[in-house]
Image (tube, rainbow, N blue to C red):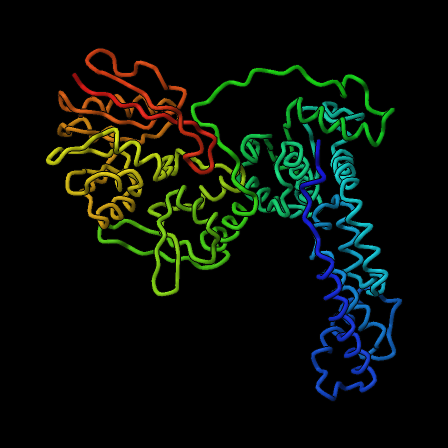
Length: 526
């Protein structure tokens, strides 16, 4: 596994800037100590003496002669600047949980080394050079946390199913130390699978969601592994034989003679069943940010608002800062971006709390709740519209219209859009389309015929075929159906006699968050 290139580069200027700032603040602290009562405009340094006093509350053996003890104040300053220096790199995140806890305790108790140029530079260089070793230590740390009492757990190496005890504390809350080890496992798996190691996986929040799903297997991080939490605070983790073998290979580097050969043997490759729509896991950082905002706005950490539209539809607001990547994901789960002056938010026509939990657990889009909405990109939409060859006066239908990504390429005055989401229907109407809020399959049972039907149907659970045959039933004789379909359907006879059908080449990477391949089917009704 080539791991060297995935670490964050570190600029030495950041550390030297911290050293310069540290020297000035240290001078202020010493001056305040000499003046005792902080005269001379140095009152800002009192913060460090207060921090030192708080630290001494848990240390009865350290009683300074004065609250304004220069040595104690400088130690508080040292601790803060060590924390800043570590934060300037990714070294703390690359440490295994045990080392992270050790450093956090040293910082908390103000027992860090002196923040001098030689000490800081040599320590940071040593820590950075140890990042690859930390990867092995992280694997070893996870293994040492596995249950020693369950007979299914092998004492000499990883197996396909792992058991960790004590994930919840006596109050039923998530134990932060255990969460750290599970987060270590997630980072190791991400690195093994070729992803960039995430800085923060929001694992404590993920485990908090699992407290409402005791005894239920939940796929994590795009289905790479799965996890189940029990009321007795035991956590079962299923990683599969291939990942277990890779983890044992790392352990074997640390303990060559301790890992049995059968645990170090690569398992035989198994043919993986194909699925109509394969998800790419969404980025850790974006999902974590959405989870953070969502739990704040929807799950009781802060107040949320409701607004009643004229059709009595409740809309919840998703407020707060978001990156472009977050915005794309929010749109994928059915959010509509709204703006007023300099204020931005997303509106949903359903309660998205459950979907946000799903995002946090799986890092994938839950299609059954969000109607599997994937906006059609311009290239694909333009190609489909060109195949339709719409003439003046022809009637056009766009089922499953979403926010109009495909419909935007069709003539508005000739196009009828059908959309299951009430909020999306409002957006389509505002864009000038004739928009009907309905489930297309039900609506089609009594719908009129159209000259052209241009469709981007949902793909999973056989729905693509159902939607395309339903669309075909609404095409007039001599009319045309254009459908964006999974690449796995390309070349198949989907409509039977009475149709002349042709297929485009495959299109790749047309739907964010998925690895799906699509092709355009153009079918003319004879």
